[in-house]
Length: 479
Image (cartoon, rainbow, N blue to C red; front, side, top):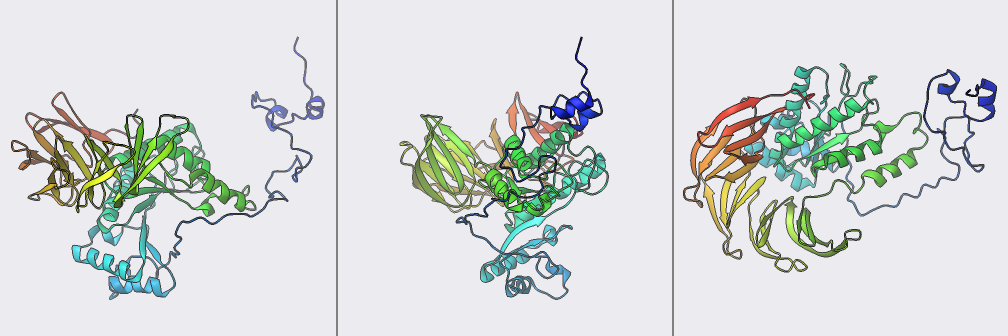
């Protein structure tokens, strides 16, 4: 016969959780009792900071710029009639700030002309001001699929606008599972189902903007699951995409439990998310090579439990894409670097081409690069690469696949452009295939079929006939 547990006995044994008192079957392990030295009485919520807490934050080497979000300090020049782009940037600097962003409504930079973008870049350089992000708002996990698709498209269009002006990041939110705003409280915001949907949707946005340099920053919002540094770290680890970043906003993590403990909160933020996502990498034998914006780093992973840095090779700004072109390594950013890795411990730049690209594909000694233009580069002699421009047929390319005698270019709203490679070094335009949704990336060619992501679904193209066999838009909830 089981022993009857009375309330008096439960209290005397120190296990009086609310679940036990009301008779629920709570199987949660008993919490550790606070030590005698604790500054918190055991019956109070630990909302006060420890009495012996030291504020010993140590400054690092990161450059810090100051910005302000107001009608006078954002990079939305069309708000003030008659104010030029140059004057807008100058006003930000004159007010004592060195950075700015575009606000949450549809940015004017979506429809900016080439001359406007040129003026912006020149003004930013002249006044030493940076364009740090385009800030969007919307629930990427909205329960209404029609509304969710609108937010999804808006986020992607913001990435396109940021890419066109050289803005490094678009900030968004995972969102709320409720029908109100993106950061509204809702009972299901902290469930496993909502978390899985958040991960899935953010992966989809990153996949459909693959090839872009612009990062996707996730900002904390207190009434959603993304309201603490541990959630940011979990999102980074589950998605594992180097373009996923954290728009660090500790203010949006403050609640009654952290209000008086902000020193600990900030320390936790930098402990968890300070290093950021890992950059692209390639493993060659017992050497691991990765690229991080300006340099290639070679790591010795013979002892996998204790990898060591072997060498660092500067390759120039914007380096974010790696590819093997045996026996060489290619790094693409603001230029294409051809790196010799015959001796991995001592990589060396064999040749460089001043070309900005969003994606590349390797076919033998030919490298196909797309971005604002389509270019084929012959690296038979890596010290003297031969550059062949291809006549433009699109506004911008974000993905490329070379296979079966064709090159396929993903051109977002322009569709998928198909080039014949009868003469491999001189692609010949054949036709454009226009799916119902924008094409952002090309994934694989299998059994004469080309697959590409499209919105929440995918498309399939038959290589022999160059026609779309299937264009399916699936629900984001579908497994």
